[in-house]
Image (cartoon, rainbow, N blue to C red; front, side, top):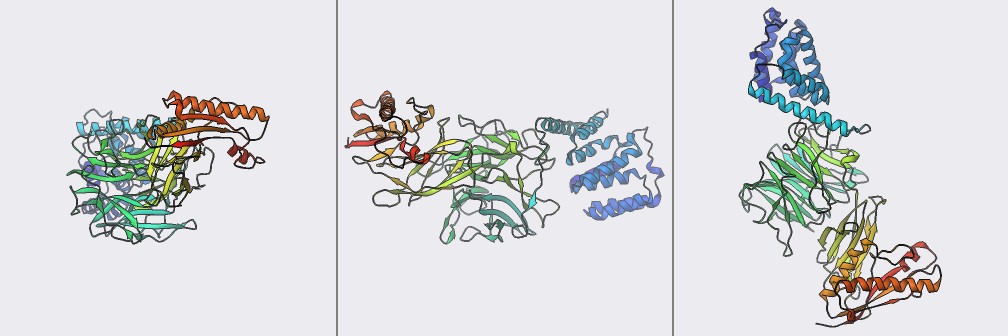
Amino acid sequence: MKNILVALLFILLVQHAAVAQYNPEKVNKKAVQQYELAMSKASEEGLTEAMKHLENALRIDPKYMDAHLSLAGIYGEFKQYEKAVLSYEKARSLDAAYFLEYNLPYSINLAGKGDFEKALKAVDEFLTISNLNETSRKAGEYRKKCYSFAISYQEKHPGENYLFSPVNMGAGINSKDAEYFPSLTVDRKQLVFTRRINNYNEDFYESELLENKWGPAKGLTGAINTNLNEGAQNISQDGQMLVFTGCNFEIGFGSCDLYYSIRTKNGWSEPMNMGRNINTEFWESQPCLSPDKTALYFAARRPDGFGGSDIYVSKRMANGQWSEPENLGPGINTIGDESCPFLHADNETMYFMSNGHQGYGGDDLFLARRKPDGTWGTPENLGYPINTIENEGSLFIASDGKTAYYASDRSDSYGALDLYTFQLRENIRPAATTWIKGQVFDVKNKSGLPSTIELTDLTSGRVVSRLQTDEDGNYLSTLPVGKNFAFSVNRKGYLFYSENFAISTNDPDSAYTRNIPLQPFEKNAKLVLNNIFFDVNKYELKPESRVELDKLVALLKENPGMKIRINGHTDNTGNKADNQKLSENRARVIYLYLTDQFVAKERLSYKGFGDTEPIAENDTEAGRARNRRTEMEIIEVADK
């Protein structure tokens, strides 16, 4: 409101060019009376009433330029950019010289409706004024930089077929109170958000997706909501953990700290402080868990930062505690404010807010993609119309990689901020992500086994995620579509389990269920090496086989009393003698790889079985694929 009053005072006090044609002294006196009433109402923050008096003034005297300019200022305050531009242009048509100083607010409203080229021309005209004070010149130069960026962005990303059309999520979720910070589980069936009740108390609410429709929102059950402020939450992909910001809690170390709560059979647990490694006497807020719950991203204001608020990451250590946070560095953080980090389910794409990177003005939304070495790439502005001249809010992208959720106070809002959903433009989408879930158990007694699960990119060899099952062996892991992954399960005293997911073309809605039996170390136990790859009828190891082979090397080095044999198998197509030779050669190259990695030869042997030991029928391609395999078999287990 202060901005509009300043603008109105500017209209009254500005010195106009001597060559101006418009003369305020010649305005109809009754129109002036209406104008003065409008100024009085505006000073009392009654802008709607002020508009009525300005309209009355213009009905009396349509050439009353100051009334057109003041009306344009109020339209701009209400974000009615089209109407503001029309009012400015009516004023300009009356006297271009008198209008010269108003090219700055005119340009801002042009940019508000996305007309950046005209906005740039307008601000250029503004900057031709010779006697501009330093504040006005800096304001004009700042806007010029924003408009030039917007034009350049549009040229690089035309987006001809993209329609930005946010849809209000409806009365079941939104209310007269403010709703914000949407967060979803990986199956996209549970939505959790913050609601500020009576513009004071922040609590968490949830809604369930039932038959493609969101059900009525309800407060989270359990002990998580209190009479204090809980907000800026993020629910884990499996829906079992909630991290959030709590302010002025008795168990806090500063004004706002990070907390977590666990889902129990009785609802959500009492908030637990995330510890002194993360929380300080400074401000920490807006947390986001990685899909595997091993990394925590958040915003904080700390003395070691680059400016205002920066984005940090903390890693979960082997003892369950969180490490000292690391600043994401000058590639992400600036002298301005970076906040609201959101790491997508693909574990590769991060979205965040910034007013320090070049944008459209105010807080813009950006994305950064993780590079093969694990560092973050250069941030990319999400572009207009997602970003505007206004301050944007936090963003959440569902696991399908295209459905976005955010808070806005658009014209169809039920009150204050409401939750909306829209489709992301293709070139700013993360990888669509499906998921795998199940239980790890002992193959003999069927009891659940707490285990470590790793997802490794077979192309780069980089571990994409690493998570722990719960105490009963239950797990949920995300699987980004578009890459081939080695999925492995490890537990001390057991053979590791491995599987290959080639999901480059799979529907991301096709989730997987794998209940995984682990074999304890014992003589004759066998393990199919599902991530060993050869070309058809060849026995040269493909590069992506290294991920599995290195796991086998590690297993042997951790268990020096173990002796194994590598077994090669084929399907029954082709000549039996050729199949026998191929299976033996494939087993041999694995044997050689292990010896090259300094595994003692006396612990190793190999054998080819050709097509003599099928594990599936050979009359289907799926069956033949299962029979074409390499195995490791334990020959001896001894303590050393």
